[in-house]
Image 1 (cartoon, rainbow, N blue to C red):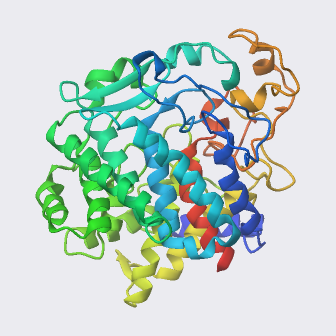
Image 2 (cartoon, one colour; image 1 turned 90 degrees about the vertical axis):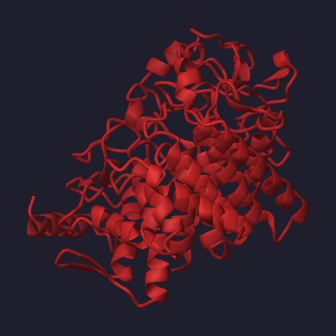
Length: 476
C-alpha cells in the first residue's frame, strides 16, 4: 500500500468512525484499574470492589514450605505466570511514573494494583538462589473450565535456580521492583527501599547465572509464555530500570557493555512481555547513541504514513501485529509513542522518516487513535473494554467471569462441570469490568466467542500501558 493509500484509508476510517467524538477517558481509566481486582489470586481484602470474585489458591507453595499466595492470574485461566505478571507491574509502575499526576482519585487504586503484584514478587524471590517463575500446572488448568475459587488442579510451583537459570523472568522481576520502588519512594520509603534492595539482588542473580527458562521450564512455560527473543533484552531492560532508580554508574556501564548482545534481527517496533527492544531505546533516549537513533527508528516503524512502517493497520485504523491478543501491541506501542512525544516536545525536535516529518503532536495523535479505537471509535462502534460504552464483549474467554459466582452457585463446580458454561451462547454472568480483550482481526471483525481466545481473552499486560494512556488523555 502506498503512502497516499495508507493516509487515505486512515483518513476515511477516522471520518467513518468520528474519531473526533470524545470518550470518557476518566471512566475508562477507573475501569482499566478496577480490572486488576478481578485478576487477584489469594486472600482478598475487605475493600475488594469486584465482589463476585472470592478467595482462591490459598495454599500456593505450601507443599514445598514456601508462601506463594497472592499475585495475579495472567488472563482467563488460573495459572500464575511470573514473567508476564512482572512485565505488567513494570508497565503499571511506568504508567504512574509518567502520568501519575493525572490519576486523581484513581491513584490509590493504582498503587494497590502495583503493590498486589510487588508483594507477590517479593515472595517469589524470597529464597536466595531461587526465583519462582510459575504456580499451577498449565495443562491441568487449561484442560478444565473451573472458577479459581474451585480449583482442584495441581498448583505445582516451578522455579529457576543457579543450576537451571531463567535470566529473562528474573531480570523482568528486577525491572518491576526497581520501577515500583520509584513509585513508592515519595509515600512509603521503607517499602520502596525493600523493593529496590530486592531488585538489585534479583538482577545480580539473573546476570550471574545466565540462561533462558525455556531450557529448564520449557515443558511448562511453553507454549504459553515461551521466551522467543532471548534473555539479553531483559538483562539490559532490568539494568535500565535499576539505573533510573539508583543513578549508579555500574548500571550505565552494564547497559553500554551489553547492548550489542541484543538480537539485531528484532524489529524496532518490538515491545511486550517477551521483547523489550523498543522500551529499552525509549527509556534510554535521553542518553547518547545508539538509543536516540533507535528510538527514532521505532517511531518510523509504527507511524502509518512512514515509508519504513513495519506494522500493519486494519481498514478501521487499528495497529496490527501477527499472533494473538493483538491489543497488547496497540496499547504498548501507543504508550511508547506518547512517552517519547514528551522529550521531543521539550527539545522542539521532529523525527524524519524518509521524506515524512513526524512531530510530537503526530505521535500523540496516533496513540490517541488507538485508544479511541479500543473505546469504540471503530467500524463496529464497539468498545473492546468490558463495561465501557453501550456495546462491548459479553462472552470473554475468562473462567471466573463465565461461570456463576460463588454467591449465586455455592456448590463446587468441577473440572468438566464448567463445560456447559463455556459452550453456551449466553453472555458471561459476571462482568469483569475494565477487562480489555485481545481485540478484532485485521479486517476489524470480532466474533465475541469464548472459544476464540486469541481475540476474546483479556490479559494483565493489555491493560497496564493503557492505564498510562488513559491518565494522559483524561487530562489533555
